[in-house]
Image 1: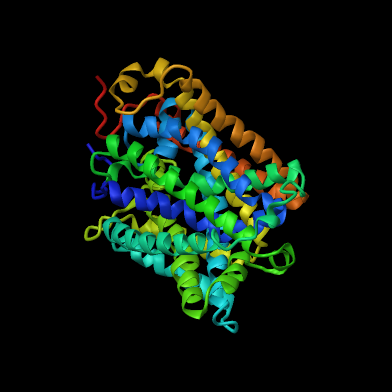
Image 2: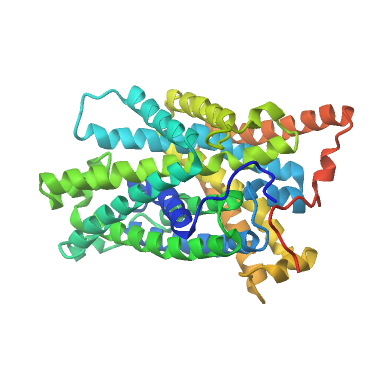
Length: 456
C-alpha cells in the first residue's frame, strides 16, 4: 500500500526524462566551465572518468529500488536498514547543500545564459522568478511536472546533439596536445566535481510511490539515462576543447557560449542557448522540486518534523507545505550570493554525503534481507555485491576529501561541517523530545512499512 498519500502516475519515459534532466542541467552548462578551468584540455577525459564510479555506485540503488520500491528511498532505506540518525543527517545535509548550493548554482547559471542575449537584465529577480515558476508547476501535480520535463528534455537533447555533432567535424586536434598539462591532481579534482553531474539520477529512487511498476521501471530508467548522458557529456567536452583555443576559453565566463559564437550563426546560437543551456538548467530545477520533497514526507511520517508540514493538497495530491518551505529556503540560498565555485562544491559534497548510508545498506542487503533480495527483478551477484557499494563509499569519501581540501577556507569548509553537525544536533534533541512523549526513534530501524514490496 502507498502510505505516502501520493498517487502512482509515472511510466518509464517520464522517469527516464526526470533522470536525464536531473543530470544534464548541472553537468554540461554549469560544471563544464568550472571543470575546464581546473582540467584544461583533459575535460572530456574527466567526464569519461567520472561516469565509471558513479555508474557502479548507482547499481546498488537500482537493486534496492527494484527489490523494495518506496517513496523517499534516499532516507528510508538507510533509516529502516542501517541507522535512523545517519539517514536523517544525510538527507538534512543534502537538503541544505541544495538550498545553499545546487539550486542557486543552477538558477544563477541560467541567468548568465539569458544575459548573453539581454545584458542589462538583473540577476537576482530573474533567478528568483525561475525558482518560483517551477515551484508553481510542481504545486499543480507530479504528472503535469513530468509532462513538462519530458518536453523540455527532448528539446535539450536535440540542442546538445546539434552542438556536439557540428563541432566534432570542425575541431582542431592540436588543441588536445599535452592533454595532462594541468597535472594529475587537477584532473582528479575535476573528476571529483563532475561526479555530481551524474549523481542526479539517484533522485528517481525518491519516486517509488509515484511510479507505475517501480520494481521494473527504476532499474530500466538508470540503464537508459546513463549511456545517453555520458555520451552527450563526452561529446560536448570534446567539441568545447577542440573548437576554441585556451586563450578564448580561459577568458570566457561560460565556455559553451564562446564556442557557440564560433560555430553558429545567430539562429543556431539562439536555439543552442535557449533550447540547450537554459532548458538544461530548468529541467534540473524542475527535477529537484519533483524529487526533493519525497524523503521529507517520510521524515515527517517518522515524527522528525511536525505532521502538519506534510499535508497533501486534495486536488493535485502534492505536498504543498513542503514545496513552499523548499521554495522559501531556495530563495534565501539565491539571495546569499555565494560564488559559483563554492556553490558547486557544496552541491557536490551534499550529493556525495547522501550516497554513503545507502551504499552501506546495499553492502549487506543479501545477507540481512534475503527475501527482498530474492524478489528483486534486478540484483547484484557475486563479487559485484561488494564492488559496487564499496566503489560508492570510496568515491564519496575520496572525492569529498578532495573538494573539502580545495575549498581552502576555514569558513567555507566549516560551513559544510556545520550543516552536518546541525542535523545530528537536531536529531538528538528531537529524539529526546519524542521519547518524553512515548515515541522511540530507535524503533524506526527494522520497521516494516514498505509500500508495495512483496518478499518471496
